[in-house]
Length: 153
Image 1 (tube, rainbow, N blue to C red):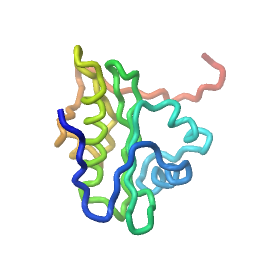
Image 2: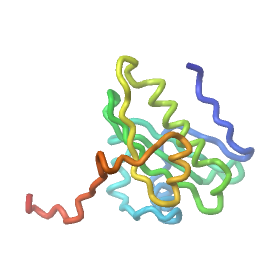
Image 3: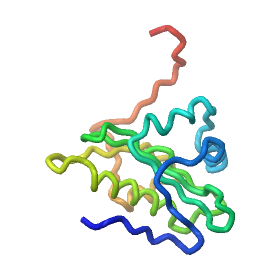
Image 4: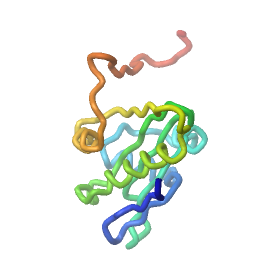
């Protein structure tokens, strides 16, 4: 297995890690993901297995991101896939996804098969399907807790 070599369009740089909190929050908002708070965002580096983001060479602004939440053994969940609307349709989302998948392939234990999941919003489904992701229903179905955690558990 060779190293990952991003074939980004000129003018962009992909970096390991996580964008600054203000950029993370802004990118989620302008790309249509659910808004988060600063106190939620500050925990991302501690709770993630790997992350990467793309900046513009022109002004060093953060224009794309993605990360993996996981145990490093067998379970890996791709989250926070977002590209700034002005930079979409250039293949940047695919470069982030491929970088995330490459990290899993390079670092997950070789004596087992990693279980890689994500929640696919409508705009990203074509990208994920193109890269080998399939719907799990009816075998399994993603679920989310909709009631607030307010001490009722």
